[in-house]
Amino acid sequence: MANDNQNLEKLAVAKAAIKFVKNNDVVGLGTGSTATIAIKELAKLMVNGLKIIGVPSSEATKELAASLGIPLLELGKVNSIDISIDGADEFTENFELIKGGGGALFREKIVASLSKNRIIITDSSKKVNNLGAFKVPIEVLPTAYQYVVDQLEKLEGSVTLRYKDDKIFITDNLNYIVDVDFGLIDYPEKLGVALNQIDGILAHGIFIKLTTTILMAKDGNVITYSK
Ligand code: 5RP
Image (cartoon, rainbow, N blue to C red; front, side, top):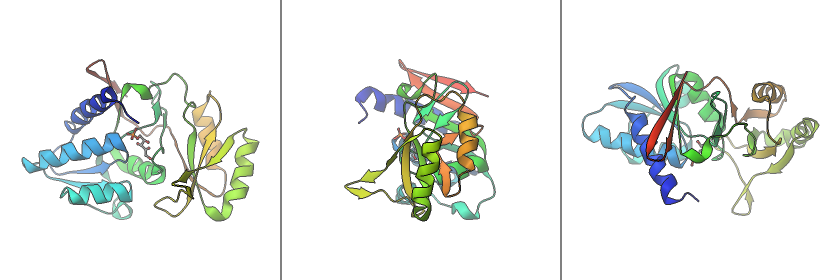
């Protein structure tokens, strides 16, 4: 649960991020509590005349953006996004991220891949020297579940199937999420490549080369990391 300071930090980076959005931009809308704040701030700017079209990265974000009157395009019908704004569960100064705490990692990855300008917004608790204290979320096709678990264990991952409200968590794409503890990850890109090779994994939460700017709030300031 976020404390008051974290909430203030999330608001600060959300406000900083929306300054990058230009009139008539197609905007990738992230998922999670920080992205939610940015989406609400964008909607406020729209009341004052900003025109954008949003591309949601989850059903929850789609519902939120629609309720705020943001016109939307379906992710599957878009071939380019001007700018995306999303949160992260962990990041390093080398622009390596873990995402997927909310289970939206697959669509978030597609949104980021389609985006020219990829902005990540976080409070100060998300910055790490090495990824891996946060378990890596991985979206798995249910029919390949046991096979994928076996492959992840061969990579020395400790696998936990994600539950919500005592039921298996089901993603927007009707798959499972496993949260995998690999310990601290020395080579995230190498691990990402290994995960990409396992049939039955739709997407994993290691995001490499998918971020252009990270905005992190700390001690009342917004720190910008740019490529
Ligand atoms: C959802 C995500 C989120 O961006 C990530 O979990 C951060 O969420 P929050 O802003 O609530 O801390 O990847 O799949």
